[in-house]
Length: 313
Length: 313
Image 1 (cartoon, chains in turn brown, green):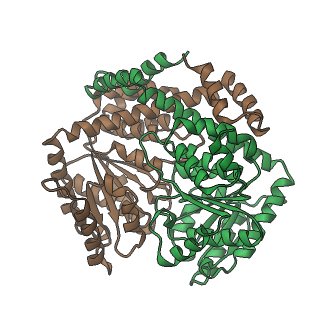
Image 2: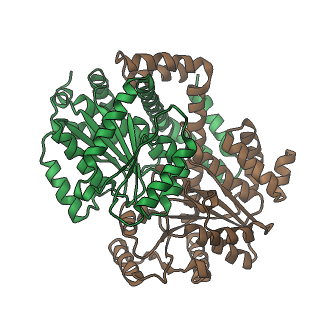
Image 3: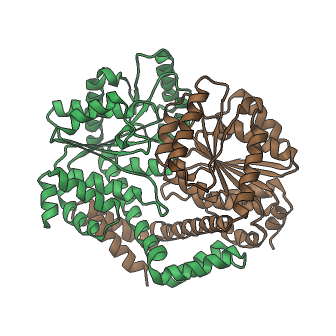
């Protein structure tokens, strides 16, 4: 056990932050430390929170964290959302809310970027969840925007996924149709004091009617006004009910397996891409092939075959 | 030259559609056909259109296509946006607009999904652009949502990238700050007849002031009301000005190289992931390792090393 890993296991926030940075930066120490932490993780319950911009996800997450704390749980938050208030653009109300949380030694909040040529944010997110898990957090909340491939992949870490909507946002229902429906375990209609709440709930209910399989769990719709903490205890109760539901079947273990497979895919992808596009020996080869592609003397598919024949057994 | 490739080169829309489907489905014929098409591509000008949901991107793209047609250009559109009206959720006005376009034999519109465990939408997008290019389209427009890794990667295909904003949408400026600024060649403020237009333009101008390098091209801000076709000819003029600007330097060729490198990355990633996670011989190995990860007897990083030692030279 390294000194850093030991400090993470004791729940030291500075050690947790440094470990997550190693992982984000692709520092070689990350892999070594993660190997040490893995046997100590697997106990945290992971909640994914996704939904369109403007749905109030960050406020909701602050209030969720507070509610879990009041029930004696330690909480970690990972925000994977370039437009999240956690990332910097917080409104005053959110900032006050967040500062209150940050001063609590049993809450850790971290936001992560989503950019970079060779992708690779996802493996850092998986690592961050595992680091917080190993550090003794009982609940880890992962926030994503909920559109696009990267976000859908990231949500694979979650045991329970909430999709957050708001009344009157025309895009909400469209977004559901576009595939987010399949990943929702709980629908949250936030800002439920706004006009149009009945219609929004009715629209979701009729979508749920369409996909409902008789005898199967129906996805609940919880109304919240996160700003005023309304509906948040009920939402946490619903998360706990979902957990019991999962534990009563083999779904829980199946979901965890999906998470580990997604994590493995990411680690392998990152390693291979670093090897091919960053290591000098291959980089020169790639540059020569790119010249020929640009001159239209070679196509990218043949170039890929040529590179792989140099790399693979 | 295959029969299908020949039909694509003649601009046959049914052949184009089938070829794009091969690519989307990961059909092995895709690679073979793409090799045949590559020497015939490279002439189309590629325009990326990105921006938040609700900015009216699809309406704007319809009007851009119409304007390019009136200037004698053939147009292809690739929408990579799960919430795009092109994907199904069109409002009545958009649908009328699109039907008019679809009946034009020199306009081809295709929407593409963004989901799937092993990623891989991006390589299909690159292929779709190259197919439309080889088929004789002069302009290829690629629409993305503009948040998240996958979308940022996709925009790498573009010669000119437009970022579409609307007045009064609080998130717009936040989104710019979050990194979209760096990829914008032209800012479009759509729905410019709405209140708050002056403020929106002023906000973008002051952001531009901050990053302006003296003597360098300043990113223009074009106001449009796409619904009424207002500002669209001016926007197309601005695209043509940007093209001359690129052609006057080495930026044009540099950007094309970034595109081919991104395409190469995607093809290699997809091939490697299919090899490791789909081929039976490796799949069994992966399943055994996942069992051990789940039992916490093995960590994902060590598992990745073990798989790679079986695959790499």
